[in-house]
View (cartoon, each protein chain N blue to C red):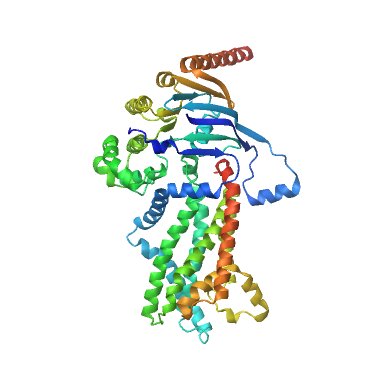
Length: 255
Length: 279
C-alpha cells in the first residue's frame, strides 16, 4: 500500500489577482477580463510506497514546494486528488508558528500542537527536545531574547522529535552552519533508515543522491523524470550544464 | 522513532478539489483540538503577558466608555432608565464581543497566513479560536459587570440563570458572521477596513446606548430589522430587566443565529480551497 498517491494533481492560480473589493467592482463594471491561469502543477501523478525515501529536485519555481504542500494537505488541488495514509508531518520551514512573546517551553507546546500533538505527547518529549536544542536555562525565557541560532536549533529539535510515518521536508538542509547541517543530515538519515516514508525537496543534489534511492525531477509544474536517484540527478545535472552553455554561448555571441 | 501502530495505518486522508466538507472539517477540528487550545492560550497569554495590568487594560476601554455614556446619557434618559450603567453595559459587553471577534477574526487570517501555508490545519480553526478567546474575555467582562451591579446596588435576579442560553446564541451568531467575513477578507483586503469603519455605525443602529422607546414610531421597524437587536436584547433582558426573554424573542435569536452560522459556513467552505493563493 502506498503512503502517498497523487492522481493527476493540478494547482493553478489566476495570474492577475484582484486584491480589493473596490478593484473587483471597478473591473466588473468596465471590462470582462478572461482569467489567465498560471499552473504551479499540471497533471502530476506520483506514488510513494511505504518506507520509501524520495528526493524532489528541480529549478526554483518549478512546483516542488507546491507538490509537497498538496501532499501534506496544506494546499488543495484545483483538480485531481492526493491521498495519504498514516500520520504525516510536514516540515516546511523551521520556526513556523514561533511566537516571540512566548517562552521556549510554551513554543514547544504550540509547535507540537500545530503538528497534531497533545500537551501530554509533548510533555513526554520535552526533555529530549530541550537536550537536543541545547537551550537549558533559556527555555523559560521569551523567544525574543534568543539568538537566531538558538531559535533555529529549537525549531529543528521540535520538528525532528515529532515522529510521523511520513515526513515531508522542504529545503531545511539549506539553513544553518555546517555543524547544524550535519545534524540535519544525520537526523534525516535516521528517518530514512528507521522505516519512515520521507519526501525531501532539496537543491543539494549530492544530499539527494546520498539519502534517497529514488528521485523525482519537476520542471514547469510537470514530472520531467522519476526513477533511480543517481540517474535522475545525472540527467538534471546534464540539463543544467546544457542550459548554462547555451546561455554562455549566446552571451558570447552578443558580446 | 517508535514503532508504527496498526491503527494509524487506517488513517487515510484525501485532499481533493472542491469545497470543504462539514464532516471532514469537524473531524479535523476534533483531531486538532489541542491546537485549538494552544491558539486560545497563545491569544490570551500574549495579550495579557506583556503588562502586569493586561486584564485591566482590556476592561479599561468599556469602563471609560461607560463613564462617558453614563455621564452624558443618564441625564438624558434619567426618567426611563434607572441604573443606566447596567442598562448600557449589559448590552455593550455583548456588542463588544461581537464586534471584537469579527474584526479580530479577519486579522487572524492575515497573522496566521504563514501557518496556513506550512502546516495542515483546518482553515476554520483560526476563526473559531478567535471566537473562543473572545468568549473568555466576555466572561471576564460579565464578572466585572456583576461586580459593578453589586457596587451600585442594582438588583441581581434569578433570571441571570438564563444567560448561558443567551451567550450561546450570541456565540453562534458571531461565529457565523465571522466565518463569512474572514473568508471574504482573505480575497479582498479592503473588506477588513470597511467592516471596521462600519462597526460604530452598526452599534448606533442597535439599541445599546439608547432605549428603544426614544426611537420615533415610524423608524422603529428599521431598528427591528436589525438582527443584532434580538441578540443584544437576549443578553440585556435577564441582566437588566430581570426577566427571562419571551419565546418570541428567544425564537428570533435562535433563527438569526442559525441562519448566520449556515450562511457563514456556506460562504467559508466555498472560498477556503482558494485561500492559499491569496494569503
